[in-house]
Length: 246
Length: 246
DNA sequence: CGAGGGTTTGAAGTGCATCAAATAGTGTGG
DNA sequence: CCACACTATTTGATGCACTTCAAACCCTCG
Image (tube, rainbow over all chains, first blue to last red; front, side, top):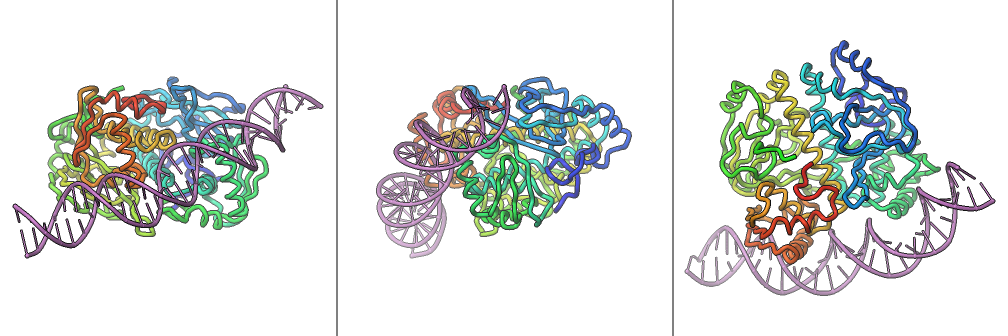
């Protein structure tokens, strides 16, 4: 079941995102939307900037317009666990509203980032007023939950090259066949961490993937000559086949 | 932050569960609770019974009173992926309400099971009426989401014996020190599958765990002489330490 | 142009999977 | 109640994928 151009997931539109594009706000009263729009802030954030730290009080949640953001937790011994590495169309920080009001992980811009920020307080208050907003959020969390289930399943079934390919496929849910070019974060070690592998393994796995699917990599941009070839290679052992949705 | 005796997570009470014990129903109007209670059904289900199949229309969601339930998906090639293996205090099937109204995986009793079932329709209707119910569900889904994040992190950081230990620890969140005895499902292959390992690996890993933490296993019951020793062994490489909550 | 960090490559080690076979444990029918 | 058949579990031997350690390379930025 393809969920049309509403976001919360990557890559379905080319232009700038508006509040209307967010799945969470689908079908919400124009007046409430306007309130969010008024309260929102557009921000440009330079590469390397730490947006917030795990434990900070959560004042804002964010929608990424462009660039890459790393979500991570610090382990006791000082190393870091990468929770996610996300890009345009992704929302983050919104879940703090149902937790203790603090960010449960830190966030850092790993490329120059453009984002729209909304106050969490407004969201919190609005949920209690508009049941539609609540059910929307339940729906998108539910979707996220399924995705995570798949991710755990993938861990058991996919090898390193396939996991990289799967990560790439998730970035392009729109263009089913023509060659696609994607922009990755400069530091590919991040993706390695996101996928639970070491940088060396990532490097070797990417080489294998290039050979198997004719991928081309130039710096931080990746060109996929044929999405279907990549999908065949990636999804052969999964219980879901390509568009990897329902 | 310890969340008092409300459930949705295992093991915090000894007696029978009531609707009041479910986190999701905390703070809900007595009249609405009564409606759920009236509509509920207590069921005894024999070991091996399939409760529902992936794709079935979801009429009920369930709270486990005792026994073990396996949640699983069938892969294309006919093998099955174990989504979860759960026991007393766990809720399942409730998330179908925000999805397409069908179960997204199958469920089977792997031991004799006692459960209370509630109609999904009532839940669906009630969410739209009572915003408190919606926020409760958001809260518990959010909690679940954090748990899954941890689980993904664990995959990268824990070895097989530690993963088994971690599974055991999650069953006993209440008794911090005294020796504890747990009841596992008869077929331990299930737990192996749940933890993403093969039966052979499970057997060897359990042997290592026994040696390292003085665990005793008699058939389907496991005795942990010291929870803290087990926790030390299991959690040494994690970003969260023992109670592994917030 | 040179320093530093990201990336690749090589060699060796570790952990889990796989295949195969032996053993223990369970449920059945005699 | 016992013996048998069947399945779960254990154990051993081997292989593969990823990790680790180390060194070389390359790209970016000052």
